[in-house]
Image 1 (cartoon, each protein chain N blue to C red):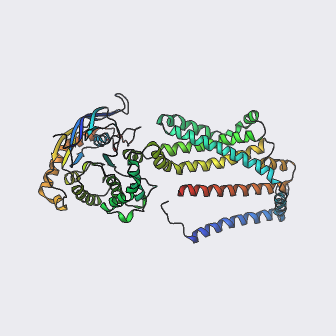
Image 2 (image 1 turned 90 degrees about the vertical axis):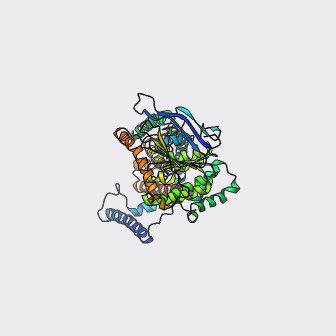
Image 3 (image 1 turned 30 degrees about the horizontal axis):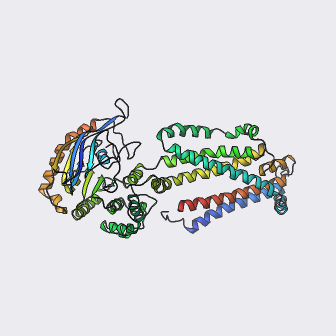
Length: 284
Length: 257
């Protein structure tokens, strides 16, 4: 793959928490390399604690890896790159003391969007996710699915080429999840954004992704990458197609042993984003 | 902030009704005690005398001198405790190591009845207002600093990570994430600090002082002027109620912001 087509290039990234021998020592990622092509939706799937969320956080510059490099476009990642990458977190990443609209405007303020443009762009982003009627609501007044739509709108308003999504529908019920997945597929085919999407769900990975990277159990590394050759936007009928099931089964076959392996591990420390604990989501 | 539905008017009125009824019962019991059950007027002066004394205290303006001293001691103590508590608390909260070291330390010191050190404070700062200010500031420093540490220390990491990923500067992070996230807890600490500052200032005045409302009350008790002493107690209760209503309004405004 040439660099013109590569949006994100991950080279030999390893990451550990604490030092060998310490109680909190965890080797989360081991010699992971990955290329994400421009405009594709790339899913990362793997057992709990395999380092997939850590990898996302490394790509986004929120975690500095112990060794290895990440390049976005032609820039080496050394910290957050708000103009290139936007995050959608699993949940509760909206500021609860601001309305949905204020949340979106504030994100653009952080990113450095001129004041005059913010309101119009926020309105467009809310329309894109179908939340225009709820602009003045506080996050606490919305359902989980609507909150994630709002978080997605905030990320879209930043107009970055790349979206990093860390189990964005993970806390939602199956039905809401499916509908949001369909919406995302439509949105993606329109915007041609590059998306890296961490998920636990096999069905979600097959339905959304152009390619799926399967992680091994901790210390995580990419075991295999499978391609889902189906154009976006994907219809709900894709979910019942034989092709969908074949791919899902193949994915399950790849994951099955890794899930068993990760379940025999006793410690599953849960970590959160940020410098002090240095990490994301589910130790992930 | 989230526009929660207020309690229905009827329920609010009913609970206010019970509160008023409680006070009325107390007053009636007081009247009965002095007029019917003949409790010694040295232990419990009759409410009519107390009322007359209260009117006299207010009319004569005698209270102004002591009130001014007590209030200025209290305000100085509370301001010192707020500035030190919030500053120290904020800086401690920035480091998990400092939180681990100082949080149990603050909690342990706060659990000691610091009023025990009043003789020491009087030796250092004298019998005047300085020792009351120092003691009040010391005692109210702890709830303020502890809540500030907890408030700023427990901000959801997802929120700070989200702000950082969108490019928030340090000032923006403080203004838009840390401050609103910590504010409710910090305000609760200020509220506690407010109450204990007032308690310790008036309390230490009753133990060792030259002036102030606490001093006046003890003085009257020593001279057996019980009705006037009770009048002063009623006066202090009223002042405290006004101050509390004031801080509640400030708190409600800050939360709403």
